[in-house]
Image 1 (cartoon, rainbow, N blue to C red):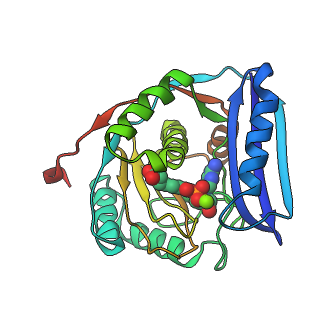
Image 2 (cartoon, protein in one colour):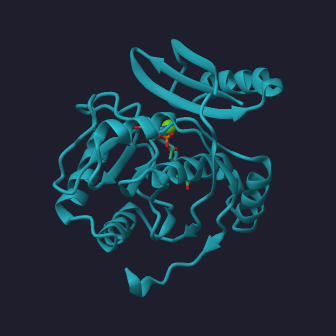
Length: 259
Ligand code: WAQ
Ligand code: MG
């Protein structure tokens, strides 16, 4: 199997990134699909596109996706209130939660978006070695069967127009939560038209929140909340261990009296 990865930049600023894990005969289709993605992004035309293809030499971890939990909120204020509650339920200290929200609101790389994620410990300290780039979860994908199951569920929920966003984010969050030491992840998109985000964790699943920012806001990002990690091992596993989602974890409801 091969890892095919794309990232696009303009004026040294991150525009988009995406990746697949494919068999040899599907490499060229994946490359052209990713090139197309890079060229038609709402954040702008890239001046630099990097697409890499690499044979995977480590065994692929096959996992079930996190369960998907759909929530409804009126606006980003309500969305953030829900995200705070979920993170508190997961025992993330309020100080860390507020710091993470403020970072994503203002652009965690000195006012710009990062290419990767912030790693935050339970003291609110940022552990990612490069505060501009951040850490990228990488080498992950979803099998055709699992994406078929996910597609059914998303279609039934009337969310088909967001399918690519949801599928890619669910795969990423599943990989992130599978790395030992991750307690939770907070994310919202940096695409100005896309207001949705999520709080993901092994304990509660992928809780999708339709509004975490206002339309038109081009800030976004990810924070991985961690406890007791060795940063080098953590980053190594996040970037390198190949993960394939082979089964969709299903649509779940969350009992709101827990949060
Ligand atoms: N690893 C770590 N951080 C990443 C990665 C990665 N592979 N890819 C993106 N990021 C960070 C980076 O800082 C981006 O600026 C930020 O996340 C947002 O990336 O409807 O679209 O690709 O359920 O814009 C979530 C909601 C959508 C989906 C997330 O993220 C839904 C999204 P984007
Ligand atoms: Mg984006």
